[in-house]
Image (cartoon, rainbow, N blue to C red; front, side, top):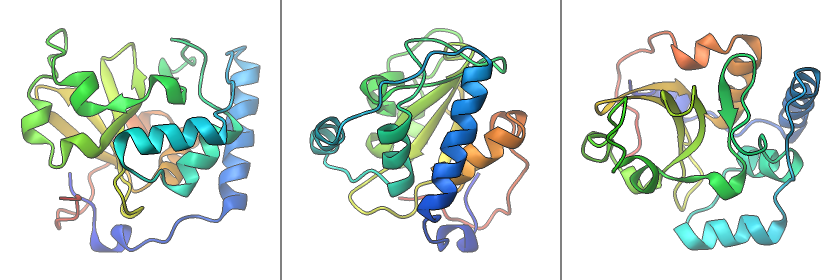
Length: 187
């Protein structure tokens, strides 16, 4: 579902807010005994950006440099896995040939600007996946949840908003409330 015009014009969140969210997430993962890290280095972040000719949004860059994601294929009590940078791939690379259950092959035809969407997390080992839009410019950077068969919905207007919603109630990122229908998805 498209983002509203007001969501598209939202400035990036202050670094202090994102640092607080990262610490809350770190504490949650520690309480659940989920291994995480290592954090991505500046060289790894630059290599990722160069490989895809993109610029990571500040909030996502900070997350990868401070926390780094869960260790390989661990998931929280809510069955969501946050990928480390080394596992992040474009939707086109990661899902375009995934014909399992669910079948994600149609997503490359239904998702505008598919090469600039990146899978950053999943639910129940690819039952649903979360992808963020990242291109040369940093705005907008919505996060979507992809359900399969080419179906997807906007989950949050940014990674900061996604993480904030996730920390309050993970169901809100899996099954986000409907947003107004004015067009706002990047093209």
